[in-house]
Image 1 (cartoon, rainbow, N blue to C red):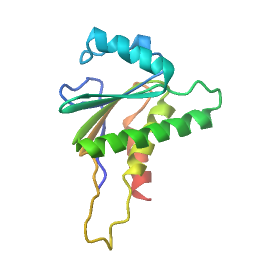
Image 2: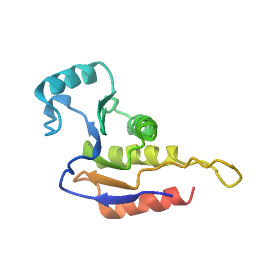
Image 3: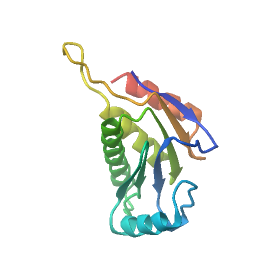
Length: 158
């Protein structure tokens, strides 16, 4: 079962969040304290992914690779989406908001990686473990509801 994908312009409170940003210093998130913000900037300058656990919410951060080739950036975003799915599955997160401060294609690639990671063939299994959040909210001015619907339909076809 795939989640409901909904475009939104308002950040949801008390919802686990995935943030995609090319500039960690430009992040101003109300749910991250200043000390955590500084620590996060330091970690994202060294690597591309970082997760903060503030139970019951999970905050996943991804900084796109600084590569001129869009295919490599898109694949890295898909892999980050897959990592985010693993975190969500371990923590049994029921809803997620994705904040995209990058190009819309990277946000869609991240979401595609997350959705495709959830796929498993369960028809003949006795124990079915098909975890997926019920709702995913996308806050990115470069992504339309039509693109989200198209991605959902594409994922359903797999």
